[in-house]
Amino acid sequence: MKKIVKETSKKIALGALAILATIGSVSAAPASITMTNREDFEITSESAGTIPVKGYQTAKSYNYELNVSWGSMEFIFDRGEYNPNTDKLTKKIRTNGYQYCEAGVDSGDGVSTTAPTSGTLDGTGVGKWCGFDGTKNRVDVVNKGNGNVRMTVSCVESSAASAPMSTDGVDMQIGVISSDIGSSNDNWVMPTGADATLTANMQDGSSAKPQMTFAKNSGAPVTALIGKKFNLDGTEATQDLANAVKFYLNITGTPSQGTTVDAADNAHLDTYSTLQTTGSHA
Image 1 (cartoon, rainbow, N blue to C red):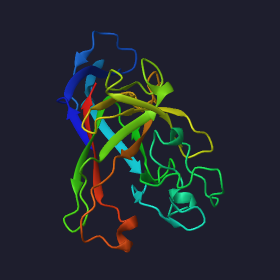
Image 2 (cartoon, rainbow, N blue to C red):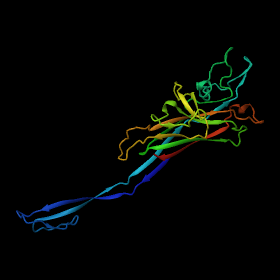
Image 3 (cartoon, rainbow, N blue to C red):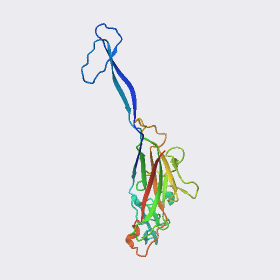
Image 4 (cartoon, rainbow, N blue to C red):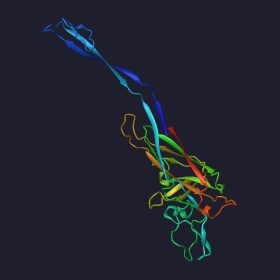
């Protein structure tokens, strides 16, 4: 995303370079002479000529340029599989990439990858969206311009035309680390009120599981002010505001299942997401 705003170039006059030529000890008032670039000229008395010096300044240009990078954005709604040892459903997919499930389930700490045993909750993560490991669901935004940018993020939900399931009841949520909200750090502004946000722990790509705040309504705008990287004179800006921010995606809710779904569709992703970012200069 790139926006450039320019002001008209301005010409400024700096003055002149003076040349004084004398013959012997002549001390009369210098006569003004006209000099032509690269041509000889003759003097008969003390003479003075000038070379005009012109100055220009380049246009003042604000560059609003963001670099956005994101994970694979691939998630699985795990409907589980039957475990004859416990006569229950257990999580079908237990790979590291899909062990972490939606925020609000086990505080977003993920699910066990070991086989369930007697006396433990079987099927942790069954009936949940999984894959939120802090890499697949992470978006990084860097301001590379010389002006501050206010970014607004929202989600747009849609169903795949060929998918046998719909996204009825499925909600996409935007999450940021709670400590980044407010007048410091990343300056994230979240929807207000308990009904507008969810607080839970989730992976952020490391072993830590920080507390995050999620916008519960997928269409709710979430904003951040991202500081400029450079000043107008080209020097690197002192970052009063965060120059780079990150946020995370969460999906929750049970998609409705059609009558034509077969076993292969248990791990079928049926929602496509578009993370929309709009920038305006601050």
